[in-house]
Length: 141
Image (cartoon, rainbow, N blue to C red; front, side):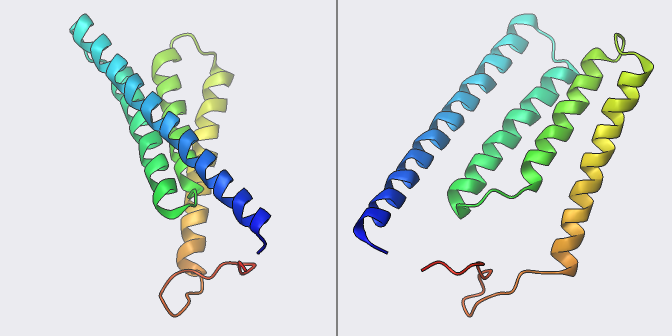
């Protein structure tokens, strides 16, 4: 790898870390705003708790990405499932029958996707190198 490629890779990693920090800080601020709103109203609703779970999932995803430099595909799917559940809880009274079926079907499809991914990881595990880490394809040079 020549110097320009190395510098480009380091620059991309730095930008990546800055953006992840911004996402993390913004999520913590949003959590604070949500808790403040609950305290102000003196009421904790299910929608508020689901929103906090969404924020927690985002923070978990950021932490996993910083630690492994990879984004597990299941995490955004979990976030989507919780977001759709929150949407159902908040808007179920205003939803038509077909909208309810569509959102519920979307949750089912996402859950089946997670199940398929998990099955694939268990049934067809990644090959490991001598250090016990998954092999990368194509190998990095």
